Structure formats: C-alpha cells, structure tokens
Length: 434
Image (cartoon, rainbow, N blue to C red; front, side, top):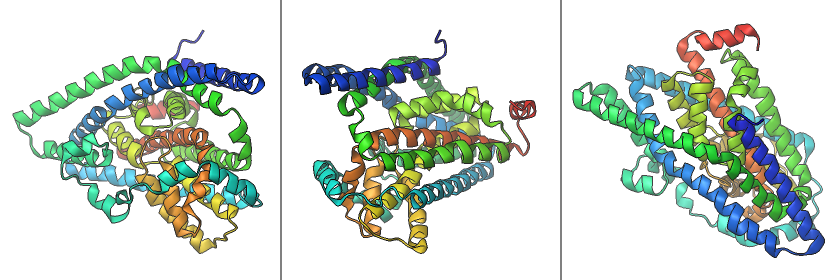
C-alpha cells in the first residue's frame, strides 16, 4: 500500500521508466514509431510540463515571501549577516570539496582517454545545431555583467525575465528594511507577506499531490525517446559522474551533517527523501524549492527563519552536484581531445567551477553554457559539449538531487551553528543513534 507521497512518486518514476523502455523496445522491434511519438508529444510531455509550469508559477512568490520573512524574522541585522556568512562559507567549502571529488574521479578513471576520434566527431555532428545554440548563448550574463546585474534596475522586469538572483537581492533588502522599521505600517506589510506565503504553500501542497503522475510522464518521455542507446554510448563518462556524485552524496554530506550539524545521517535522509526524489525527477532545484522548504521546516524540524533563508539562497547558489559535474565534464572533454592539464591548471579549473557553479541557473541543462565557457579556458572547442548533450538529461537529474540534498545539509549545519548547541530535535535523534 503506497500511503506516503514520496513512495508514490518513486513508484511513478519506476513505472515511467518501465513503460518508456517497453515503448522504445517495441519501436525497435516493429518500426511503428507513430503511436509512441503520439504518446510522448501529446500526453507524456505536456502532462509533465504542465506540472513543472504549475510549480514554476509559484516559485517567484514563494521565493520572494520566504526570503522577506526569513530576513525580517532575524532579530537584528548583525544576526542576519552572521547567518548569511555561515551559509556562504559552508556553500563555498562544500562546493570546492564536490569539485575536488569530481576531478579526482576523472583523473583516476580517465573516462575520456582513448575516445575514438571518429565516434567523437560523429556525435558532435549529430548534436551540432543544439551545441551551436548553447555556445552562441548571450554572453552578457557572465563576468562583470553578471555581478552588476545582481542589483536590478527594475524589479518588475527582473521578475518577469526570471532573474531570480536579482529578485532575491531585493527581497533581502526589503527584509532588512522591515527589521529597521518597527512601525505599525511595516508590521501590517509583514503580515501581508506572511499571508502570501501561507497561500502559496497551500497551493503547493495541492499541486505536489500530482507529482507521482507527472514524474511518471517525464520519465516515460525520456526513456521512450532514447532508450539505452545514448546511455551505452557514453557509459564510462556516465559511470564516472555517477560515482563522483554518489561519493559526495553518500560519504561527504553524511559526514558533514553528522559532525558539523550534529544530526543523524539516517534521520536526515529519511526527512529529505521527498525533496530528493522530486529533484531527481524534475532536474530543477527551483521547481523543487517548495518541497525543499516544506521538508526543511516540517520533516527536519529546522527553525523557519534559518530554513527559509538558507534553502532559498541555496536554491540559487548552492549547487554541489552542478559544480562537480561541470569540473568533471570539462576534464572528460579535455581527455577526449587529447589535451593535458597540469595540477595548477586543474586548481584554476576548480576555482572557476566554484564560482560558475554558484551562479548556474536552477533549470534543466543550465550547466551546458557554463561548460562551453569553461572549455574556452582550457583550449578545447566549446562545440565539444555536443558529446555530452545526449546523456545530459539523466545526469542532470542526478546532480540536481545532489544540489537539493546539499541545500538541506547546509541548512542543518547552519541551524546547528546558529543554535550554539544541538537543537532539541537534533539532540533526540543524535542520542538515539537512529
């Protein structure tokens, strides 16, 4: 009996894979692709996209209200600065560790060494149009322009063009202003923001009930279209990425949570699994943000102010899996093209990945333009990303699951650091050894 939502989501995930592989096998055996294309293009993909659109529709009001409340709930600006600094330090350290794990895996396993140049060129040609579009993406969103653009000239324009980081900056400043303005009018405004947050959370609770069906549709569309062909083609690369992601998720983060956050890893993963499964299915930290916030406050019992601030900031900047993947993917492509990088160059690559990982957009496939940019630094054709575009969807799902897990782990650690001692619920779980 599937009584819990995460169990239903996981069942939908497995059912979608099974039906998708079955459809792919049927097409390979009979050549009858029309029925499968109809199921993908007119049923599965629209249903999955509708679910994602419903979540994305609520992300902006949720992100805005949660951050304003999180900052305004802090008793003083100094405390807010302390929480922000701790979040930044934990994010930077864990992101650097994640990239280090990825680079180590690539150096030990050499997934790109010996890659057949003929196959390499053929795959690149197959993905040439998509790769060119990615490489030709607007460069104005990088470098100094990205830094200046963090502060929006027009908050309405920033919101309408999905410039989430700019909206977050505005929300933080508004929260600080609420702390510094203890007037009846300011308090009334805060109550209105609180009402908005509660209404959005209620809508999210209703929409998330559709997750099992949407996840099944998304997985069916992926597997029915591509089957195992693309997965087998770049198997060594995929296994290397999955191994590195697994080490960070199931070794580094549990140790971090236990010793820095004084929380049982078993308790942490039990409480986080709903958000992890949804992140894996949607491949978007932003789309998963509503569920991540709910998990942090209700399942893990984190203080609302800390949870809202750390998780919301983390959804935009705390991308362990993304940064790990970007570093490993660049090194893989470097190996494919026969280029050698010394330790100093790899150290520079690590630093670039820390910065780029924190600035990568929280939507599916957002790593591709970043990887194309990084390839330029190591003298590899940016069009080389055509080699990994085909298998990016599955790996994107895996690294997004790690991103969200990292957000929650950081929230646990920051909450413990803010408390100065183990929070009551953490102490109970820790002492029970569960």
